[in-house]
Image 1 (cartoon, helix red, strand yellow):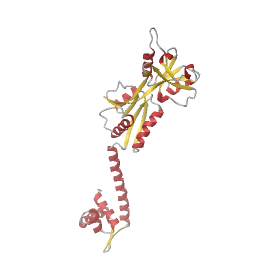
Image 2 (cartoon, helix red, strand yellow):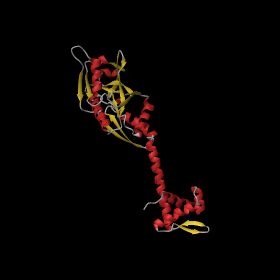
Image 3 (cartoon, one colour):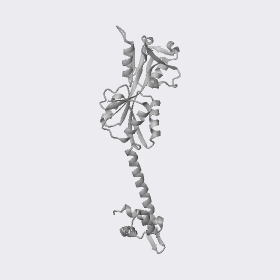
Image 4 (cartoon, helix red, strand yellow):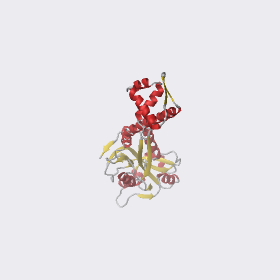
Length: 302
């Protein structure tokens, strides 16, 4: 059975007005057209929807049930229309965001909180992977946007640099250098530097090699297939020193001191990058990129 929505609107209007004439005026149609709609609907259903009298009309029990159901239907239609409009504007829908393992949990929270506050209708699905895995996920369409440490050289799509973070050294509070407010790179040349293999481990390793390169030898770097949390736990226990981005500075490690590293050129930094595919037309992605631009005033790259 095909029910005409205009007939259902006529039923609702007549029920509210108690008169076919007044209902027709509200709907801006002729009374005869409204009467035909309702008679046709009654014929389809095989029931009387209104009791008609010289004083007007009133719903029968069947009509009351139909009117209530029609109101619920139109509420659902209105919700559907609003949802589609919000989705088209990127104010509702699903955003699949990938974050590199180098990004601290607190930084992820702040990025997402800013966007959710502005667009509460967006559902965000978060994935944490290595930089290489996220670039592959972008290409496969498994994530809409990836935020990684350093430059995503493997990524052939669009990207923009976001924020940069200073590089800091983490030392045990018992380490002789921990009393210094700032540490020179050369102060670390005889240290064993413990790094996570996870991102941005390779970028930090390259930076260390560049800063501490020496004729006939180089820095002593030990890499573990472990998270930054585990590496910092070992530093707290007095096991070597470690290099990190400043967002990893945390009061959770009471026995660790974080110090800025400098040389003659000043502090060292690492830049974080957002990557996405140009052909991805998800409106929720466009809105998220707007949030990143507003928050971080980034440089757009290609």
